[in-house]
Amino acid sequence: MTAGILRESGSEKRVALLPGETASVIKMGLKVLAETGAGEGAFATDAEYLSAGATVVTRKEVITGADLLFTVNPPLADEITLFREGQIIFTVLDPVINRDWLEKARIRRLTVLALDLVPRITRAQSMDILSSMATVAGYKAVLEAASLLPRFFPMFMSAAGTIKPSRVLILGAGVAGLQAIAVARKLGAVVEVFDVRSAVKDEVKSLGGKFIEVEGAKEDAAAGGYAVEQSDDFKRKQQELIQQRAAAADVIIATAQIPGRRAPVLVLKETVARMKPGSVIVDLAASTGGNCELTENGRKVVVSGVTIVGKSDYPAAMSSDASRMFGNNLINLLKIMTDREGNVKPDLSDEIVAGTTAVSDGEYRSPRVKQLLDIKQI
Ligand code: NAD
Image (cartoon, rainbow, N blue to C red; front, side):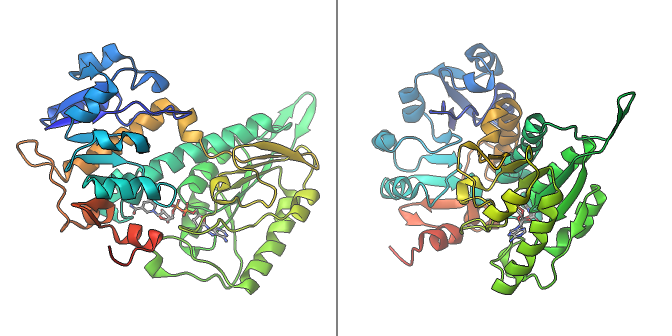
């Protein structure tokens, strides 16, 4: 079978497979076509793809010549007529945003594997692109905050006197939040952490963070490790405590999200007004509404002297390692679908494949896609 690597468009700098990972795919028995310039944003040249064993061709030749297509973002909607029945597209789907594209792909009888819907089970950990990208985001968020902050992160003892360490408040201890704790601690800050899932308490502590608990959080084992919407009483108690801790913080890294819903608003306007001027909030939940009431998605704003960064494209800003992690996750998923002869056949009886297959043979498949798009039947 032949796999194709597409070049991304717009501000996307990542590529689904770098030359190193391309060589691994070729070893699995696949031929690879790479679009001219596919790796440019991630600092990989066409010559490197060629020496990895790929053939470098035009976009049209990749789309028409490949059985499998690897891409970070779905291809353009007006290209859909170039695709043919049975082709398998591996992409980060974001089904709500790309609902119309997905419907076109279904009608065209393509198979779409949504890399953002890999189930959160232990066997699928090595395939989880969202975790990889959250790791990058958590790391970069702290570095951005440190570079914007007019203070040191670590305690400093010098001839000019002793400088106190910065206080970092982390909201949400999922993959991004845990990475942010680790990096902020390595830089020497004092770290406090809020989460509604008490299961993360030990992990937070082992990374050197202080877990701030609000009594009465609602947890739901059926939510697959994700958080659920909280009661009004809990929200009020949490907000009071966050106000208090935020006023003492130099930096807030906000990562709290609830899948399929608006991100919880945890930092109110009044809270920002109580923060020290010069403080920094990096809101990784910006694309789903933000954890801070004043966050503007994709922008950096300054309110009452507090800089609020609403960025959600950190993985694209670290395109080289983000692409490497992306490619490795993709290969691990590909492996469970590939037979000894190098044929890729998604088998819907496998829990991971069933959860990841958004559409195939003209049908919506993944229960999560159906739930997110509210699809009862076709
Ligand atoms: P996420 O991005 O959905 O949310 C980030 C964090 O925000 C979560 O920890 C969540 O509990 C927290 N949060 C939500 N509402 C909040 C509120 N009101 N106040 C404070 N915090 C709030 O989370 P994620 O990074 O995707 O991780 C969720 C869980 O899934 C983690 O336990 C993670 O380890 C697990 N996970 C498992 C796998 C796997 O087993 N394959 C893969 C990835 C993640």
